[in-house]
Image (cartoon, rainbow, N blue to C red; front, side):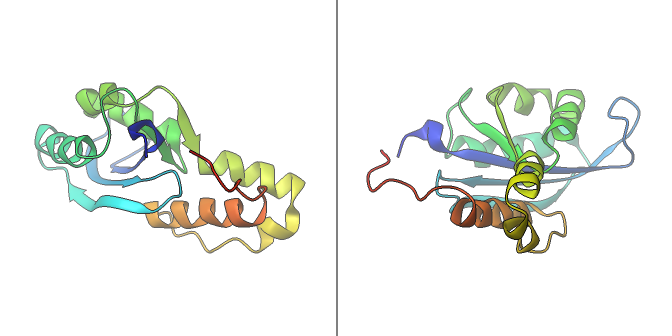
Length: 150
């Protein structure tokens, strides 16, 4: 598998919605392969010291993804990018500029495949929920993968 096929899932929790004014409180990170199998994860890393939390996240990600090629994924990717840029700039700079936003896929499936949307797994907002939802869409809404995808 190519390293650029890896997906970096990040979820953040902050004290409010304004990254410039609010404090980053928690960070969760996972790395999956292109088939959405989890390769590594760190859930609910407390952010008492942003630099320390950033180093924990970077160490986990760097084991699986080279700098500049990890595609950021999640259900609120725009919000996550804003928080990373404000509080964890080294981590922000490590990631590729492209994103996979599960909420965008959800909205497309809702419009084009309402039965698939109705049968999606429950979402409590975790990285694992986002991965499960994207797996569901891959299995039910997208065409089957060709026999040889490498």
